[in-house]
Image (tube, rainbow over the protein chains, first blue to last red):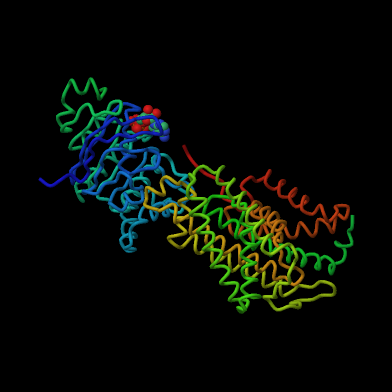
Length: 240
Length: 305
Ligand SMILES: Nc1ncnc2c1ncn2[C@@H]1O[C@H](COP(=O)(O)OP(=O)(O)OP(=O)(O)O)[C@@H](O)[C@H]1O
Ligand SMILES: [Mg+2]
């Protein structure tokens, strides 16, 4: 079997002196959707930040994307390895228009016709963004911003999409739509996704595999299907 | 109070032309200030001193290296851009770009150092600067005299503004500038290399500042010396703030307004001594900012949480 697209081994992460991840191992295969579950403060966001080599965190260990180490690089390098990251809290550019936000997502893309085609595609997918294309992103509703954040990440046509709690603050109906869209993109393009989610039930429904993170350690991993139905797992970790 | 001004159109026109002359210069420098703010999200207190230094380089190029004046100006703009890029790399980049206080202190330090170095090299005796524009008047009505210098300065300010506006709104580097000043972390997550982007912003702003300073000292009524930019920088800052700090058009209009306010104020309200023109202009600025904190043309920050 070929090696995984994302492979993390012995990852420790810290904010200054505060250690948050205490040596985690995980991997995501090409074409898979993998979800990371866990309580507040477990270190899920920190895990994604470590992959993206964000400046906030100091990382030890090894994180490889398609065989290339991301530890010690900077986020702009990691983007060029084919990783796109929708951060927790969306991270759109509030002072830029919706359309400019999408253009920024394609910052590493050279092909202009591809950029315009993709903008059109996401306007079709989220028609409200087309209506608001000239509006400043900061004036969008929370749900609209989330759609924008996801579309912006997709603009770079990533091999690996990192999503940090995409359902946060969205109405249940919108959440379902968003997850359907993500599942569709995964099915149609084979895009690999690593999703952090509080809404375990929904996340497991589109995932192939899952990891459960607790206090900076992986305490459980397995097939999404099996996790969903395992009574003990549900009660201990998933809380429903 | 002197209301002659309001009853004699000729006198009024003369004052308006005076104001336009001052305002055009403020506008030019204010546009450069807004540029660095937009490109680097920083108020660079050394901007005026860097521009003064750049103008001196042009002067040296012309007087000592024997370059034709306009070539000397271009060379000086390139040298200032390179110098600013080096300053960014060595003195600015080591600091966390999201933490503004240490950076502001660095730019204050730069202000003092550049001023002192220029004082050491060129001393404080004023030297005549060659004229860049035709002398004489473009339009005259009695005592009202609109000089070619004013017309060209205004044209230069508009041209520079249009060029920078194009750069910011239509080019990829412009998008990067705007993204970095909107959200630093997200900029990196879309692949923007923040360091080199800010470095280019410094270089560009330094070249623009040098251009502004050269035109300022090219007024035949002025001579070049190391403290030349200090007062104009205060008026230009007032103009930039009035226009909204993040609006290039605002800087242009703000410059013209500050120029008019400054000359009309001291001429209508004659009890305001000339020395107080600066304070009076700042007062007007404060009134505007209290009424409209984002300036006349600035974008009010919008953000939903
Ligand atoms: N910028 C930071 N500086 C210092 N400590 C941080 C920072 N961000 C997170 N932490 C700490 O790291 C730990 C893990 O945080 P993280 O954000 O990774 O959790 P999470 O699993 O994403 O939680 P949530 O579900 O609430 O988003 C927490 O104890 C938190 O206090
Ligand atoms: Mg989190």
